[in-house]
Length: 73
Image: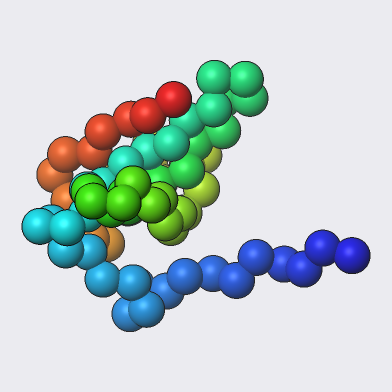
């Protein structure tokens, strides 16, 4: 019934600091966290990876060369 979500590869997604910012979206109900990029103009969020541990956050930062990530609830 539901298809498996297609994984986004780094080569398919580019991060431009001028138009996007790195964001971790966290659910206050379930605690689920998703790392991705939010467009500064439109507010559109593109999810990149599920965060299960602090190690995943470090991997996300390393893959895209990010130093600061904001968290949204």
